[in-house]
Length: 120
Length: 108
Image (cartoon, each protein chain N blue to C red):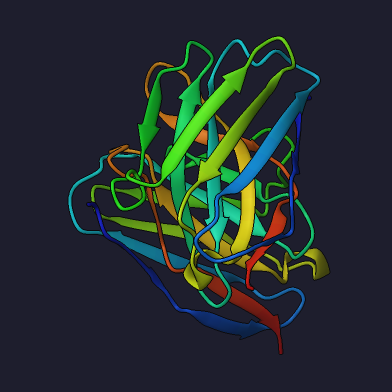
């Protein structure tokens, strides 16, 4: 049973870069796509992007100019950098595994989420 | 973007009730629709994928149906742990992947 755990600062200043890491245990990161999803206060879920272990990425066009995803297969981790943050980026950030079975895909394992607040 | 419209936004029900949540997409997505349950402080849980396939380990009181643009999640007999927020998500297009607005299920 794969498990995911987010880590990183809970408070980021406006205009700075939000950086989070997701550690994968109970399975290898060298398969599936690995994803970031966020939930802002009072709003729904928003998909940020996915990365494959090879480094191939898919980004939400609405955030693409500010997002960088990376993967470290030696540490079984993947990371999110979101630049030039504003209060609108305050959210619970989740990491998740997206599996594809040849016909359809789904997020089948998630971390518990970490709250990141953007404030000076 | 494929828009996903979920209803209702909130719902009050009692333990043992049968409840239904619906999602409608802005274009035909065949069966590429997934359902999740979110509870504060816990990892979100995949309930149903490909519109109607029950994820391993999920109780059989959960079921999904639909295809094309209209989809339904049904909980046949609510349990205390089911009071949470539910989301649908389309997986037909990854540019971008989109979710419904969520349904908050509360105890009556």
